[in-house]
Length: 119
Image 1 (spheres, one colour):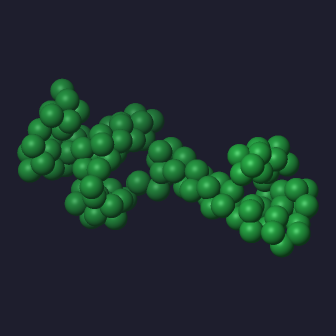
Image 2 (cartoon, rainbow, N blue to C red; image 1 turned 90 degrees about the vertical axis):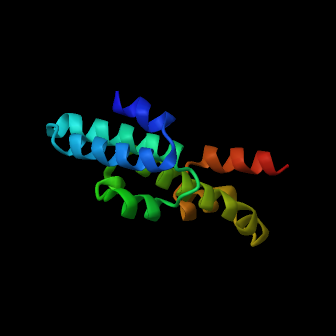
C-alpha cells in the first residue's frame, strides 16, 4: 500500500510516493477524498517533521490543508494556549476570574484550572 511505502521510504522516494498518493486521493469521491487527504497529510507531517507547513504545502501542492480536521485542531489548540498564557498577566492587572473568562471567551472552569496549575 502507498501509505506504508511513504512511511518507510527514504526522503526522495517518499516525496514521489506522497505526490502519487495525493494524485490518487484527488480522484476519489468527495467523502473519501477528505478522509484520505487527511491521512496522507498526517503521514507527511510524520515523515517530514523537520519541514514547516508552508514547505509541505509548496512541496506537495496541498491546497486543502486548512480544511482538514488536523489543521483545525492544531489551530484551536494554539489559540487556547495563547489565551492560557495571558491569564497570569491579566491576574496581575487585577482582573477577576470571571472578567478573564469573559475577556478571553473561555469557560470559567478553564480559567480556574489554569490558575490552579500556576500555583
